[in-house]
Image 1 (cartoon, rainbow, N blue to C red):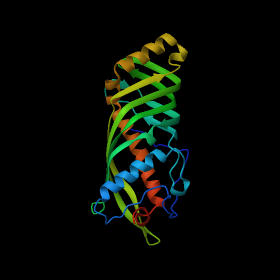
Image 2 (cartoon, rainbow, N blue to C red):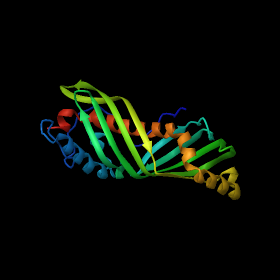
Image 3 (cartoon, rainbow, N blue to C red):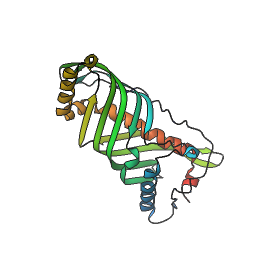
Length: 244
Protein backbone atom coordinates (compact mmCIF):
# COMPACT_ATOMS: atom_id res chain seq x y z
CA UNK A 1 0.00 0.00 0.00
CA UNK A 2 1.33 3.42 -0.90
CA UNK A 3 0.28 6.88 0.11
CA UNK A 4 1.14 9.82 -2.11
CA UNK A 5 3.14 12.66 -0.57
CA UNK A 6 1.06 15.25 1.21
CA UNK A 7 1.16 18.77 -0.15
CA UNK A 8 0.43 21.39 2.50
CA UNK A 9 -1.08 24.60 1.26
CA UNK A 10 -0.42 26.79 4.22
CA UNK A 11 3.24 26.77 5.18
CA UNK A 12 6.81 26.14 4.11
CA UNK A 13 9.81 25.21 6.23
CA UNK A 14 12.42 27.92 6.77
CA UNK A 15 15.56 27.69 8.83
CA UNK A 16 16.09 31.10 10.46
CA UNK A 17 16.14 30.66 14.25
CA UNK A 18 13.54 32.57 16.26
CA UNK A 19 12.28 32.84 19.81
CA UNK A 20 9.43 30.78 21.18
CA UNK A 21 6.10 32.68 21.10
CA UNK A 22 5.49 34.32 24.47
CA UNK A 23 2.22 32.43 25.02
CA UNK A 24 4.03 29.07 24.74
CA UNK A 25 5.28 27.81 28.11
CA UNK A 26 8.98 27.03 28.54
CA UNK A 27 10.56 24.39 30.75
CA UNK A 28 14.06 23.94 32.16
CA UNK A 29 15.80 20.72 31.16
CA UNK A 30 17.34 20.50 34.66
CA UNK A 31 14.09 20.78 36.62
CA UNK A 32 13.07 17.55 38.41
CA UNK A 33 9.52 17.62 37.02
CA UNK A 34 10.60 18.19 33.41
CA UNK A 35 8.25 15.54 31.96
CA UNK A 36 5.24 17.05 33.72
CA UNK A 37 6.25 20.57 32.67
CA UNK A 38 6.67 19.64 29.00
CA UNK A 39 3.36 17.77 28.98
CA UNK A 40 1.52 20.75 30.44
CA UNK A 41 3.24 23.14 28.01
CA UNK A 42 2.13 21.06 25.03
CA UNK A 43 -1.38 20.61 26.44
CA UNK A 44 -1.64 24.39 26.75
CA UNK A 45 -0.19 25.04 23.29
CA UNK A 46 -2.24 22.65 21.14
CA UNK A 47 -5.64 24.37 21.62
CA UNK A 48 -4.00 27.64 20.55
CA UNK A 49 -3.24 26.31 17.07
CA UNK A 50 -6.47 27.77 15.69
CA UNK A 51 -4.37 30.54 14.18
CA UNK A 52 -1.09 30.45 12.31
CA UNK A 53 2.21 31.07 14.07
CA UNK A 54 4.24 32.01 11.02
CA UNK A 55 7.28 32.92 13.11
CA UNK A 56 7.67 29.26 14.12
CA UNK A 57 6.33 27.68 10.91
CA UNK A 58 3.10 26.40 12.46
CA UNK A 59 -0.04 26.84 10.34
CA UNK A 60 -3.61 27.25 11.46
CA UNK A 61 -4.76 23.65 11.94
CA UNK A 62 -8.43 24.60 12.28
CA UNK A 63 -8.64 23.35 9.58
CA UNK A 64 -5.37 22.11 8.14
CA UNK A 65 -5.41 22.34 4.35
CA UNK A 66 -3.81 19.59 2.28
CA UNK A 67 -3.70 19.84 -1.50
CA UNK A 68 -3.83 16.11 -2.20
CA UNK A 69 -3.42 12.67 -0.67
CA UNK A 70 -3.89 9.13 -1.92
CA UNK A 71 -4.93 6.11 0.15
CA UNK A 72 -3.83 2.99 -1.68
CA UNK A 73 -6.01 -0.06 -2.22
CA UNK A 74 -6.09 -2.60 0.57
CA UNK A 75 -5.41 -6.33 0.34
CA UNK A 76 -8.94 -7.38 1.28
CA UNK A 77 -12.30 -5.64 1.18
CA UNK A 78 -11.11 -2.30 -0.27
CA UNK A 79 -9.97 -2.98 -3.84
CA UNK A 80 -9.90 0.67 -4.86
CA UNK A 81 -7.37 3.49 -4.73
CA UNK A 82 -8.80 6.55 -2.99
CA UNK A 83 -7.60 9.81 -4.50
CA UNK A 84 -8.34 12.98 -2.54
CA UNK A 85 -7.79 16.64 -3.45
CA UNK A 86 -8.56 20.04 -1.91
CA UNK A 87 -8.69 18.52 1.55
CA UNK A 88 -9.53 20.18 4.83
CA UNK A 89 -8.59 18.18 7.92
CA UNK A 90 -10.02 19.47 11.17
CA UNK A 91 -9.67 18.46 14.80
CA UNK A 92 -5.90 18.49 15.37
CA UNK A 93 -6.25 21.40 17.81
CA UNK A 94 -8.53 19.29 20.04
CA UNK A 95 -5.99 16.55 20.75
CA UNK A 96 -5.97 15.39 24.37
CA UNK A 97 -2.34 14.57 25.05
CA UNK A 98 -1.38 12.29 27.94
CA UNK A 99 2.28 11.78 27.02
CA UNK A 100 4.86 14.02 25.35
CA UNK A 101 8.30 12.91 26.50
CA UNK A 102 11.77 13.66 25.15
CA UNK A 103 14.64 11.26 25.70
CA UNK A 104 17.52 13.61 25.00
CA UNK A 105 20.15 10.89 25.31
CA UNK A 106 18.31 8.43 23.08
CA UNK A 107 17.10 11.24 20.79
CA UNK A 108 13.47 10.14 20.79
CA UNK A 109 10.11 11.78 21.37
CA UNK A 110 7.20 9.66 22.62
CA UNK A 111 3.65 10.94 22.19
CA UNK A 112 0.25 9.49 23.04
CA UNK A 113 -3.28 10.80 23.35
CA UNK A 114 -6.49 10.94 21.40
CA UNK A 115 -8.48 13.17 19.09
CA UNK A 116 -12.19 13.41 20.01
CA UNK A 117 -12.88 13.84 16.30
CA UNK A 118 -10.83 14.18 13.12
CA UNK A 119 -12.87 15.26 10.12
CA UNK A 120 -11.53 15.00 6.57
CA UNK A 121 -13.46 16.79 3.82
CA UNK A 122 -12.06 16.40 0.30
CA UNK A 123 -12.90 16.08 -3.34
CA UNK A 124 -12.57 12.36 -4.07
CA UNK A 125 -12.11 10.02 -7.02
CA UNK A 126 -12.97 6.31 -6.73
CA UNK A 127 -13.11 3.53 -9.31
CA UNK A 128 -12.96 -0.03 -8.03
CA UNK A 129 -14.66 -2.32 -5.53
CA UNK A 130 -15.46 -2.13 -1.82
CA UNK A 131 -16.78 -5.26 -0.08
CA UNK A 132 -17.05 -6.84 -3.54
CA UNK A 133 -19.42 -4.06 -4.66
CA UNK A 134 -18.52 -1.80 -7.58
CA UNK A 135 -17.92 1.79 -6.53
CA UNK A 136 -17.24 4.69 -8.86
CA UNK A 137 -17.57 8.43 -8.61
CA UNK A 138 -16.08 11.87 -8.10
CA UNK A 139 -17.26 14.67 -5.86
CA UNK A 140 -17.33 15.84 -2.25
CA UNK A 141 -16.55 13.38 0.54
CA UNK A 142 -16.40 13.37 4.31
CA UNK A 143 -14.63 10.89 6.56
CA UNK A 144 -14.97 11.30 10.34
CA UNK A 145 -12.81 9.40 12.83
CA UNK A 146 -14.24 9.43 16.36
CA UNK A 147 -12.16 9.15 19.55
CA UNK A 148 -9.02 8.42 17.56
CA UNK A 149 -6.30 7.07 19.86
CA UNK A 150 -2.77 7.85 18.72
CA UNK A 151 0.61 6.60 19.87
CA UNK A 152 3.80 7.74 18.21
CA UNK A 153 7.54 7.33 18.61
CA UNK A 154 9.77 9.78 16.76
CA UNK A 155 13.52 9.37 16.35
CA UNK A 156 15.44 12.55 15.67
CA UNK A 157 18.91 13.84 14.92
CA UNK A 158 20.51 17.03 16.15
CA UNK A 159 21.99 19.64 13.84
CA UNK A 160 23.93 22.73 14.80
CA UNK A 161 22.94 25.98 13.11
CA UNK A 162 24.72 29.16 14.07
CA UNK A 163 25.68 27.70 17.43
CA UNK A 164 22.16 26.47 18.25
CA UNK A 165 20.88 22.89 18.40
CA UNK A 166 17.96 22.08 16.11
CA UNK A 167 16.32 18.68 15.81
CA UNK A 168 14.90 16.88 12.79
CA UNK A 169 12.68 13.80 12.82
CA UNK A 170 14.39 11.07 10.80
CA UNK A 171 12.09 8.11 11.48
CA UNK A 172 8.78 7.50 13.17
CA UNK A 173 6.23 4.88 14.09
CA UNK A 174 2.57 5.84 14.51
CA UNK A 175 -0.45 3.74 15.46
CA UNK A 176 -4.12 4.72 15.16
CA UNK A 177 -7.14 3.17 16.85
CA UNK A 178 -10.50 4.87 16.18
CA UNK A 179 -13.64 4.08 18.14
CA UNK A 180 -15.77 4.70 15.06
CA UNK A 181 -15.28 5.82 11.45
CA UNK A 182 -18.07 7.21 9.28
CA UNK A 183 -17.95 7.78 5.53
CA UNK A 184 -20.00 9.80 3.08
CA UNK A 185 -19.21 9.95 -0.63
CA UNK A 186 -21.49 12.21 -2.64
CA UNK A 187 -22.25 11.84 -6.36
CA UNK A 188 -21.43 8.14 -6.62
CA UNK A 189 -22.43 6.55 -9.94
CA UNK A 190 -22.95 9.96 -11.58
CA UNK A 191 -25.39 11.04 -8.91
CA UNK A 192 -27.57 7.90 -8.77
CA UNK A 193 -28.95 8.51 -5.27
CA UNK A 194 -30.26 5.00 -4.67
CA UNK A 195 -26.99 3.31 -5.61
CA UNK A 196 -24.94 5.94 -3.79
CA UNK A 197 -26.98 5.69 -0.59
CA UNK A 198 -26.70 1.91 -0.69
CA UNK A 199 -22.92 1.96 -1.05
CA UNK A 200 -22.52 4.52 1.74
CA UNK A 201 -24.77 2.45 4.00
CA UNK A 202 -22.84 -0.77 3.35
CA UNK A 203 -19.50 0.96 3.94
CA UNK A 204 -20.68 2.46 7.23
CA UNK A 205 -22.27 -0.80 8.39
CA UNK A 206 -18.87 -2.44 7.86
CA UNK A 207 -16.69 0.53 8.79
CA UNK A 208 -14.16 -1.44 10.84
CA UNK A 209 -13.46 -3.96 8.09
CA UNK A 210 -13.16 -1.14 5.56
CA UNK A 211 -10.92 1.03 7.74
CA UNK A 212 -8.66 -1.80 8.89
CA UNK A 213 -7.97 -2.79 5.28
CA UNK A 214 -6.61 0.67 4.44
CA UNK A 215 -5.47 1.66 7.93
CA UNK A 216 -1.82 1.86 6.87
CA UNK A 217 -2.73 4.61 4.42
CA UNK A 218 -4.40 6.70 7.12
CA UNK A 219 -1.47 6.05 9.46
CA UNK A 220 0.88 7.40 6.81
CA UNK A 221 -1.24 10.53 6.32
CA UNK A 222 -1.33 11.31 10.06
CA UNK A 223 2.34 10.41 10.42
CA UNK A 224 3.42 12.80 7.68
CA UNK A 225 1.32 15.60 9.13
CA UNK A 226 2.81 15.17 12.62
CA UNK A 227 6.37 14.86 11.31
CA UNK A 228 6.05 17.93 9.12
CA UNK A 229 4.56 19.99 11.95
CA UNK A 230 7.37 18.96 14.32
CA UNK A 231 10.13 19.46 11.77
CA UNK A 232 8.83 22.85 10.72
CA UNK A 233 8.65 23.98 14.34
CA UNK A 234 12.10 22.76 15.30
CA UNK A 235 13.65 24.09 12.10
CA UNK A 236 12.94 27.53 13.56
CA UNK A 237 13.05 26.91 17.33
CA UNK A 238 16.29 25.51 18.76
CA UNK A 239 16.43 23.30 21.84
CA UNK A 240 18.16 26.17 23.62
CA UNK A 241 15.16 28.40 22.87
CA UNK A 242 12.50 25.74 23.54
CA UNK A 243 14.00 24.97 26.96
CA UNK A 244 15.59 27.28 29.53
